[in-house]
Image (cartoon, rainbow, N blue to C red; front, side):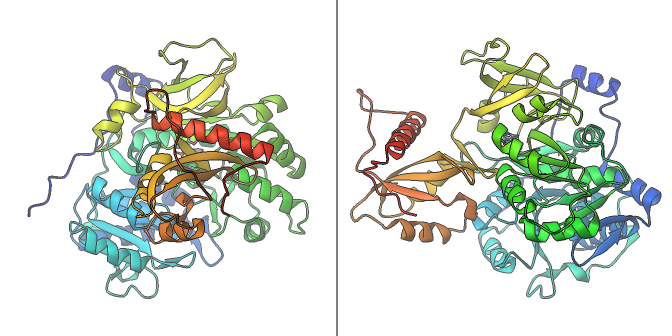
Length: 556
Ligand code: OOB
């Protein structure tokens, strides 16, 4: 069998917009390889990245990246090849990512929580020829995943493992520097630098092609808005591969400005507070449930957190009450961040009044971000009213990779991205997120497609039908609730969850709660859309929960 031809990676804007974004100075022809080389020359001996075990200077980061680039090219990888990267919060995450950039290879950023189902989907969709992973992270052995992956994905040619025992795979530590192998020419700034993963509103995650020029514009502008400089020490407590701690302003913002990236393996306060004290961390980003957990811990800690300057919260809605609690505890500036891997990022500004910081999710980065708030017919709604958020601009994609169906759904004819978010916009252009238009669940910042979880559940022999919905949750923001019509003997909730775990799927997608029902109510004509069904199940459940007279028995 011959393998399918490699689909080109592309992300193109119409000529008039290209001209406009260049003329405005947003797109400056910056590329990742040039960025790293320039910073290594300028900040060589300063600390670029630090974690509990290691401390890398800018010069060392470049050296590591060059060695990894040479090692990958020596294996036979070709310019433009895609490489799925699954590395947790260790300095090598950046060593490998920059190594791929220097080699002209294209990283596909998986999260450590992803399992075989997600990873093989990324490999297939991106046509990746290599998988680079950490041997072990968070008590999970990625060599096991790599074995399954190789068995399933015959087109995957290489597995590189970072750790002491790479087993039958190529050890990352065996790579040798070889300057002669590295490309001498920088990539085209308008070419795709990497593939980011979408939160996934329907089905499995989509691949998001971001160009050097567009992404580095968002990084540069974010450093300015967030006040990041060469004295900033930015803590990555969320997964490093996620767009928020990567670029808003994230680790890349810190490196862009000559600051230091501090990596925490755990997002929990105990470990992170130790690092904040030791490294005098100035900036960091959290999702709302963590921010609340940190606020509680901070009020009792003996650690010195006085170096903190800006605490960002984003990824899911921070309610104004939660924002108040965070402000009351941390003696630093709160910044709300409403962003998406597809592009658009909104920030409250550091000098905004308290009302704006408490009640809005900020305004767009760029004067060239076009934002529409529209009704069901696509017509703009009056200011202050709720509508669907559509956007296009100098760092928002115009299409997903290798997914015509998603592109037809997610983009308008004139190139606006349908974010799926319902928002209100103030006179000053600030946005308040009201919720989602589609059925994705935002569980502590992790985005989960209801459809994807339903699909998994339907594979169980004792599941006749399943509908998955989000239920408001004090700790998580939203939790996953699965309504199930059993087939034959009713399975037990915990057993069903345990079975889901064996499916090789990220743990955050496993329902928190399972509710068995006899039937799904249908409309008079006897049919119903999944969307309506989910909405009805959710509202009935919430009503019953409020009345505490639920006839169904939720399992823990
Ligand atoms: C960030 O990116 P993604 O791609 O994981 O998720 C994007 C979606 C948004 O469409 C929205 O539904 C939700 O996450 N979201 C928020 C939010 N920030 C993101 N919903 C309410 N309030 C917020 N502040 O999550 C992301 C990317 C870059 C920076 C920050 C977050």
